Length: 237
Length: 285
Image (cartoon, rainbow over all chains, first blue to last red; front, side):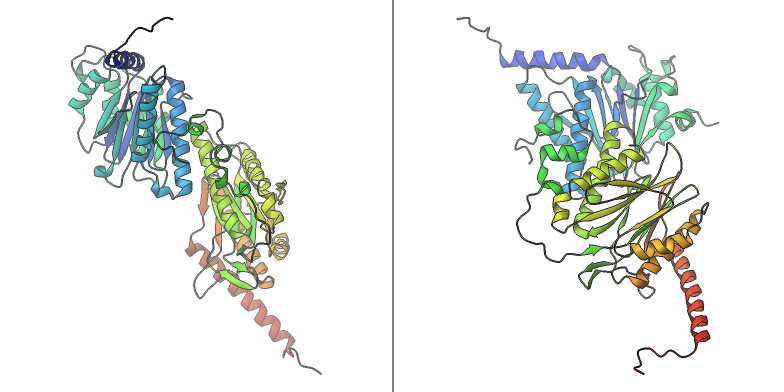
């Protein structure tokens, strides 16, 4: 009878985490940032059909990085969760915290029990009546949850882009200001020290942008594309 | 059926359907009206919703419903709403067992929104109409117990342009109606009125007036249909669907329409009564 090699739990978890982290870092970053009237989501994504950002419920949106088939499955589960909850109780009883919990439990269970962790990182965001009531949850491949304020950068060179974002972002920016900043951040090359050193310009058509706009009634989610996005990204004269 | 660990139950993570009802059928069928086991016996008298009218006009479609729910000969509710936005480009009105009909509308609204969120695109108008057909068919067992739900569906066809109307029977049969249609207990009278009032090429305000007037006619002759209530200011629910989307006609506009119809009818009735002199009522002579 062959004896399996002994692998310490620490090593096992570390290997899995490294595996998931590598997968997530391979893709392009997604930036989620609050602005005065809501929360903006943006990523560099030339595809018009395979979205990384989508609507979950009236005031809740979802953004993901990593393997498409894995986060797409989680997105659909989230829509089903929210719709079922809203149908069983009331639309106002669906909130991002409950959804983030379900995601965390699912990711955590897969990380510890399945043969391969999910190579995804998610943001679940809910827009509130005021800026203070906005909720942004960041979920990692291992099921850990972070309650974020202001902005989140995940996937790709997340750590580096986060530093650039930190220099530019402040509370109460307008949508146009936030989107201009995010475009600059997404285009920051690896190793550049600040946003100013940026030579690359991402065309608006290659950006996937959506907002949760708190001023809209009921369904707050809206995709921004075409002339509307061009206008927002054009510097005011 | 929540998972005790708090993670998503298996059905949530099963890829495949973009239909909320199909998902419910797999995950928790008791939440679907047609999937609950029916006990033996007859159902006691329950509130019934009555007359819905719909008419096309140049660039869209109008749908209107009265505000009365009846339970036998009693008025169960005088402010019930029976015309709803199914999504941004369609409206659904209901006649029949009120409780089930409202449940069905909620499910239908969710079905369309769920599809839109999962697929990232709107269903075609025919697709929506067929989906409603399937849901009505699922209700056949209840209909045989006397709990029938008869919807009227109307929407703006974004592919072809223009408003379209669909009617249904309890077996889920779907029939496209042209120009105008009406369902419910007062529909016989409303249809008569629509035939005389409807004109091709009407604009939206004219169509709203025709819809309200046909409801007034239905309420005149059908006890289960409520007319506009000028004392409590309860007006029919009237909505238009155009390329610009679903729009519920505001109360102020409806009040003006109702007042205009009432003024015209009062004048005509007074003139007629004046012309044929004294009324003899039920005198035995």
